[in-house]
Image 1 (tube, helix red, strand yellow):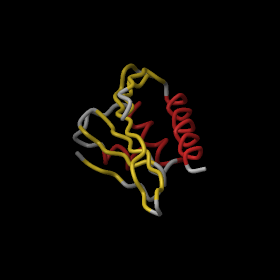
Image 2 (spheres, one colour):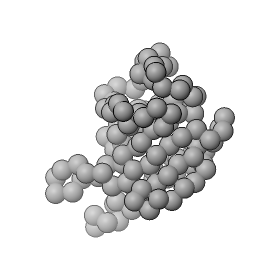
Image 3 (cartoon, one colour):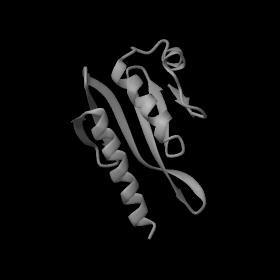
Image 4 (spheres, one colour):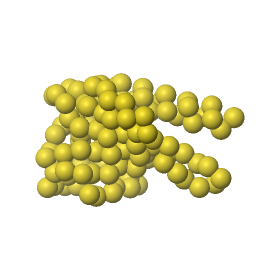
Length: 114
């Protein structure tokens, strides 16, 4: 299992290098790029064989904590199979739908912090 903390936006060569030894799938690479491009400060990526675990973070008492974990596997050439914790909800979604899920999670966090 490898934990990745992104500091800069990754290009294809760096992403491919980081995924060496993992079953390389384009959809999982696209998920990593999405996180690197837009969610650097909100999502940790953990590589585990043919799966990604995305830890969606939030701040509580001035410290970062994990709000939800989303396990991601490639389901089809353009679909992802995700399992959301702690609910253990399973869905088959596209990459744009994953981005919408991130927005929903952020909205939950914002509403809980009011």
